[in-house]
Length: 221
Image 1 (cartoon, rainbow, N blue to C red):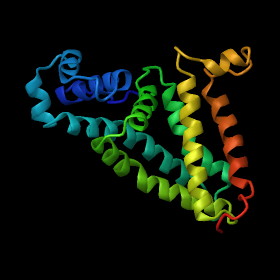
Image 2: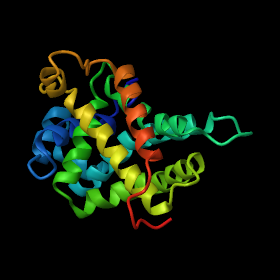
Image 3: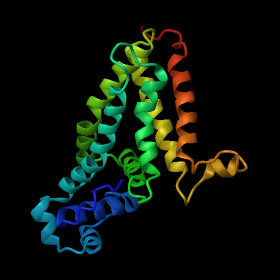
Image 4: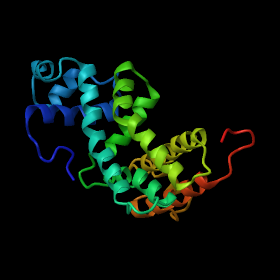
């Protein structure tokens, strides 16, 4: 699945070049000159299509986030309406789309994880606003689904565990980067971090068990 479906328009070339450079260089270090050079456009094209670097950052985050979040919602919607989803179904709907896409042959989707790590490492007003817009409603909907799958799970606990689930998913996908592979190394090759279905199976088992765990003493219901 190509990120921009082979769209070769000027706007799309700028977005794809910006994604690659932001993901590898960081938002602050990346310059518009680098982006225009990679996209083979002039600086005026960025100002025409986006207006500013901050607006370009928001557009890049939108372009990479919307397809993944749509796939997550579609996966959750496939649960038969006559019953509540199982915990495994909810967790798989949450984590499987980004894991599978990150192993796409183009390599473009794995940049999303790098990009989100950049967002967490160096918060900026523009990136924070984009993350709120793309992920906050999704998070609330998945928290509701987690609570439906595990009625004993309080809302506070559900939010904590949702955050832990996202963290585990982001870590293992970043670990699978061709330049890292730490888990594969320290396990002596036992853990194949180039197998997305194995990663998903392990994540689902681990996260679902965590969701079912008893709340710590004193936690609100």
